[in-house]
Image (cartoon, rainbow, N blue to C red):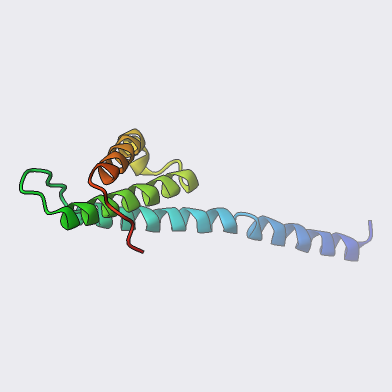
Length: 112
């Protein structure tokens, strides 16, 4: 093998070794950012008060907010299975189903 070919091959290999892990590192950064954002959003979620007297509009908005958060959590966990939020995946899945049932029960409509 000629020295020039070896040098070109070595450069290509070095670039590949440097560039190859970059998408994985970007994914880790994105997951960490999403985890922090979800933690902030979870702390600000509305309490669902279903005790009479019910204010249907407030109940519907709360249910919609909780349902949307559940969807974002599910999407995050599909992209970042090693997330600390993964321990709560089953709980959020059950809550999402319960919120959907209550959404229908209270005759709520989506407001986009």
